[in-house]
Picture 1 (tube, rainbow, N blue to C red):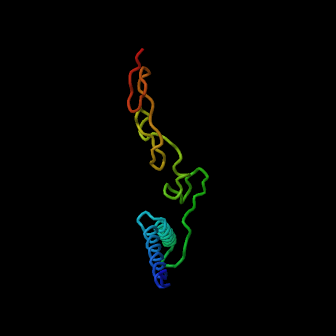
Picture 2 (cartoon, helix red, strand yellow; picture 1 turned 120 degrees about the vertical axis):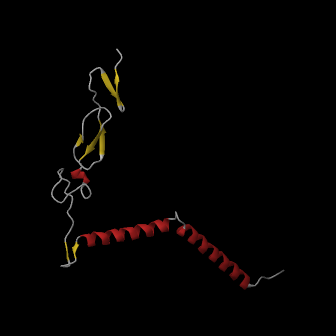
Picture 3 (cartoon, rainbow, N blue to C red; picture 1 turned 90 degrees about the vertical axis):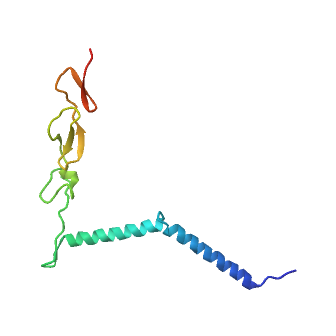
Length: 136
């Protein structure tokens, strides 16, 4: 009967451990890996927080003023705009020029919110982007 040395078993264990470590690195550090997404999200969040603080800091006095908050009251109050409070400032959906068939409607923040459906003549109907004559 042949006896194996313990050194051989130990070497095989180290090779398996090293292989498992390489496999984990490949999984977590791959371009679409979870670990990369977590690190990227953490860095992005930190940078956004730093940007928020520097935007509100008056460097001549060293004072920090909070940016205007969105109060969600349905009206676009002083300090609110489409960027920091779209829920209040994008109210109202009205056409810019007319309500003609196919003309796009916009809200106060210039977001598309509808399409005109009226035709100039009662004998016509709006089908998508143009008026068509109704056949009797």
